[in-house]
Image 1: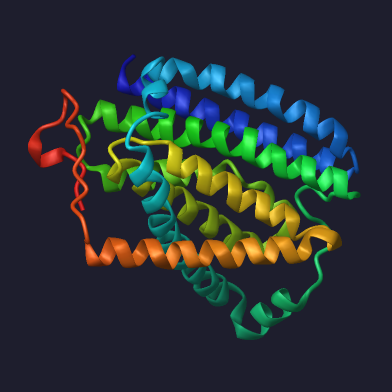
Image 2: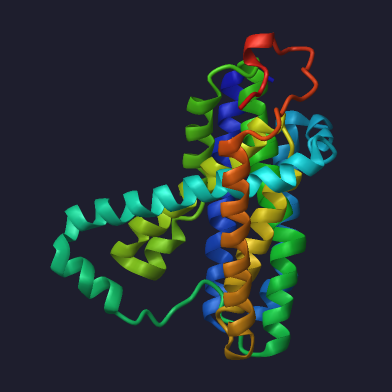
Length: 277
């Protein structure tokens, strides 16, 4: 597949993901959570089928590469990019609406959530959906297929620029936040782009491993769903706290460089382009 054909596929995937998200959001806000739980895996299966044209079986290798390091380091890179992007998003929104407008937006009670659970059973089902479907599917699509294809096409050069590209594609696949949050959608979009960049950063640094990004993405979304239902609110809060501890622990390990992370060089990589700290 040529680079132009690959870009066309990536844009097509982005359109499909937007269609999936808007469909799921409409069903969730209409109270059709049960239908959402059935349709979501089917819709993501279609996306995976389309994305398969980008890398084919090579993406399957990403599931078994450098698992231990990927599980640990993904939290650190995710945390750096996520917190930075949130700050940038708030600053940008502040310039747009001013300090007084920003304060009003933050105090406003938004009635809608992406998918509002109506019972404990539905909440737990949405948690399972995040862990078993959304996390694995979106990471396979955006990091494994989209970013992996871009890296392969460039022989793993210019990974930072390509990471910005895939993170932006990932962010624009979540434009429904503007539908839900209005101007605060700028902050949400910045957060999603930051999340995509951090997980892409981890994917590259761990030699192309999807395991860490899948776990971080799935558990982060799952903990957010736990915060939407009163009975599981405390558990969701404790999980978020635990994730912040993991992020700090990972950052300490990254900064201290207590061990050198070197991974087997792929046949198309030159020594200068091999993932390193």
